[in-house]
Length: 374
Image 1 (tube, rainbow, N blue to C red):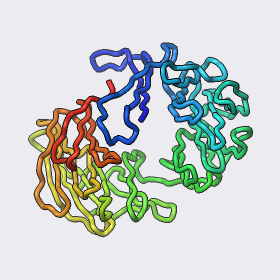
Image 2 (cartoon, rainbow, N blue to C red; image 1 turned 45 degrees about the horizontal axis):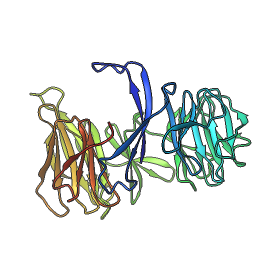
Image 3 (tube, rainbow, N blue to C red; image 1 turned 90 degrees about the horizontal axis):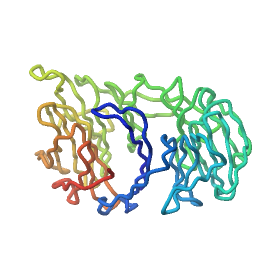
Image 4 (tube, one colour; image 1 turned 60 degrees about the horizontal axis):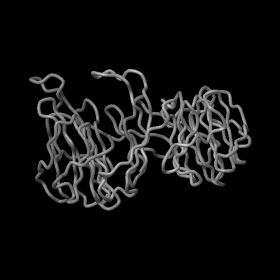
């Protein structure tokens, strides 16, 4: 796994100005082993802003920075861009060609692993993102929309999405998603015609895939994507905001953590509850109540529910409920102010927070603090 990071020159909580960028590599690619060995490599000093990091079969790790394009040869960063200057996006197409975009709209193409480049187009705005799809390539352009190329980036045509676009995502064969102005999200089966997926709330903190389709939590509500539109799921319990949503991989049960009130004796602290639904969100039952709010919630491959709870007086703890059980147990206590979960391919659980990385190999019963990237 490769992670890009930005260094800042600030002190005492003030970020200050960017001081440099680098890339950290996890020694194992499957997250199943010991993640204690990270290899960190800083980019040249002139590259103080990291705009994109992509994997290229031809070059390995390719990054777009304010000082050009760089590739890592295993020992050092090598400039591979067509010229010095800022690049904001990069991608490798299905035929192995490389594409790179600039703040002023230029799109460059290389067919020889970055040795030479050709300017193929100048789009009417900053190229914020490039995406290599199965049958076409896509470009998200600021102030203009999404452009599509069917000839490997030689020519580009504006699609039906004409709002300022910032990010692109999706499977190689589709569907594709674009973040753009005037809607939280757009979707397209082929990158040509785009449908806005609008939310009632403008802030959308999370998405989850369920057996019934994509579910989002936003503000006080849950939404499920049905027939191209977002449908609000019925929630009748008192609530201030939804903090987390998770789905059990074993049977599709929904779990929902929400804050419903503020603790009077501790201003700023919340009173929260955890609910469960076994009928795809039609009805809900309360399974846990606690002081604080839940920055992390997951259901493991064994059906165990893990929730991280933060409150102002005691920091964060992890509560665990095995599948079929009715009694919760505290399995980790830490001073961090948030803790989120990830389960690796081997079954190892990871919990990350501002005080480091924790790992569990026994389904969340015990945790060991590990070293992560500096």
